[in-house]
Image (cartoon, rainbow, N blue to C red; front, top):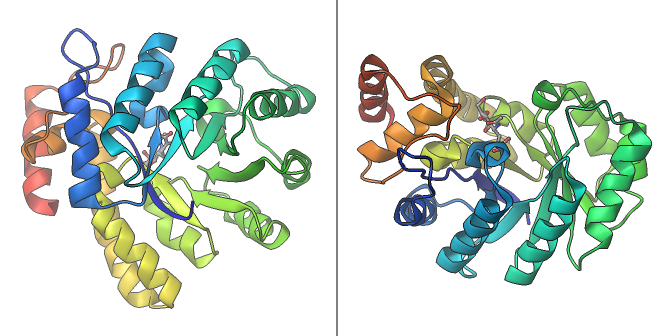
Length: 288
Ligand code: NAY
């Protein structure tokens, strides 16, 4: 389960319906062109928190059907509706997903006992493994090193997707949990996380920029930091433009320039203006 995982985009049509043909094209692009080691399905990048349970299942099914066993698959099943998480955990496990992941429960101020119960309930309900999805800047949920230690007491909880810029905590985690899987979650900080010894990374920008991410990650692991830094600089020029123009919408527009039917984002996310579409096209030509 080590390596680079794309946080998979999903193609939606203008009415917000899943575009199965487009989704399959995005998957194939990731397998054949960006060449990642695996896919992280129904994460933030899949616009997961704006879609129904049935749609989540349909996406899990299409992805597994397209990928078969070519790369590893992680199913993000987290939801503050725990019954939905349980249903999705069973569904993805039955489909053969290699691991599950669940975002920390958000919106209500759940205390740690409730968060721990959430993870144990989900993962103990199936024969699978769990990767905690920690993304404090969106959820407001911060987990301390002692709390991670308590969660990791359950051997089925095998790692964490660490989408945060707290490198002190990441370093402490690496030292404290040498046998757990740590995945970097911010692509613009991949080099720094790789230097600290993460086991892999999960990123939205890998949908188009997976090859540069691979170079950064491999150079860092070989200790070739100067070269890795150059590619991180180039990557971050790209990511800065991406964030300024609209993250997911621009990634989809770039995929379209590469001939992939990546569709639109689900409302309430808005469409790019004509000017921003032009910016995305210029970015596609400049970086890919
Ligand atoms: C997800 O579940 O899709 C992710 O969290 C993937 C990680 C991405 N985070 C978000 C919120 O999109 O790749 C990152 C991020 O888009 C990138 O670093 C740009 O900031």
